[in-house]
Image (cartoon, rainbow, N blue to C red; front, side, top):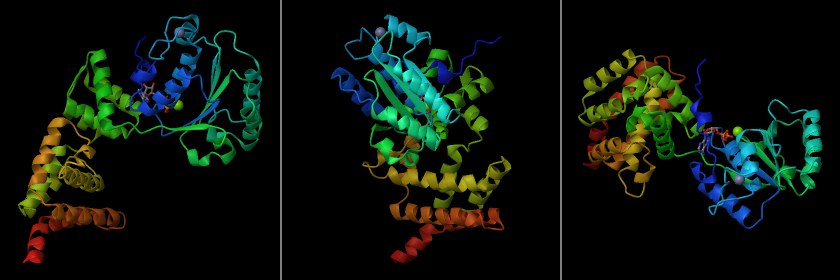
Amino acid sequence: MSDFVVSARKYRPQTFDTVVGQKSITATLKNAIKNDHLAQAFLFCGSRGVGKTTTARILAKTINCSNRTEKLEACDTCDSCESFNTGSSLNIFELDAASNNSVDDIRSLIEQVRIAPQLGTHKVYIIDEVHMLSPSAFNAFLKTLEEPPKYAIFILATTEKHKIIPTILSRCQIFDFNRIKIADIASHLAFVAKEEGITVDDNALHVIAQKADGALRDALSIFDQIVTFSGNTITYDNVLENLNILDYDYYFRIVESTQKEDIPAALLLLNDIVEKGFDTHNFVVGLADHYRNLLVCQDVRTASLLEVSDDIQQKYVEQSKALDGNHIIRALGVLSKTDVDYKVSKNQRLLVEMALMQLCSINQELQKKNS
Ligand SMILES: Nc1ncnc2c1ncn2[C@@H]1O[C@H](COP(=O)(O)OP(=O)(O)O)[C@@H](O)[C@H]1O
Ligand SMILES: [Mg+2]
Ligand SMILES: [Zn+2]
């Protein structure tokens, strides 16, 4: 039997301060604990894998800890913390409303709420995907939410805030969880890699972080998948191959050839990309992203919107110096039109080739306009 534990579980934060990218939420919660001013009902909103359940568990553990640290974290050693750590605490309940959404499920939870905690001060009820509760379950739950016993705290979590009815919204303190920034995901992955004794370069981590699209859980799953595939040394190329992502370098070279108005070079690069098995639509979207990146690094005020590793950032800055803003905006226009036309086109490859030809002629057009 293997003792492999997926990273997303192994590296679930145990303290407020180790939750990544949700500082304002954890600070507010700590402050409420400090001032003994906790709400009885919370609504944690946000996409999957950004720390809602994690934060709810930390809150439950911390408020029941009998010996909190100066930084308002759980001590990890008192009886209550021990019972949390071993998963034997009777003070935390989790109900997944996606699969337990009947009125009976809620009734048995409400029964539970009546029993005061034996150890610690609070019982915390986490109801995940709360928008999935059936209407009758919702109604049964509302009464409890209106007048909960003092020791009960409800944390409702949802990925679809707009589906929560106003009566619930008005009873809860609402926290909107952020999607996690690429740089924050990459540095968390670097930490996990170090703990696991895995060598990995910064570019590789950034590509994984980008693919995860703001969800730390997804980033950790992708990371595990690549470790399984490439062992203890992960390179940028491993990641590209595994995730079927096009090397940044292609986009730099495409832009270079359009700058030189070298249509054959651009078409040959596209051919290369197609032969590698990449989808031409993804290529169009990726190239538009590339121009967007070039645009944001032309101004120091927007430079921070560039979410890539340091050495690639350098390449963007270099390339963007060679292009003027109008050129980039035109290029974005061409690509956006190609993106829209793509689905209805009968010859998609030709459509993309035409887009490249147009990109190659932007400089000439701009010159004509100015003369
Ligand atoms: N903000 C975060 N900081 C650190 N790890 C996180 C964060 N968000 C998610 N994770 C990782 O992803 C896993 C799942 O997170 P979880 O809190 O269950 O997400 P959610 O409830 O928002 O879907 C955690 O065990 C942890 O490894
Ligand atoms: Mg969750
Ligand atoms: Zn404790």
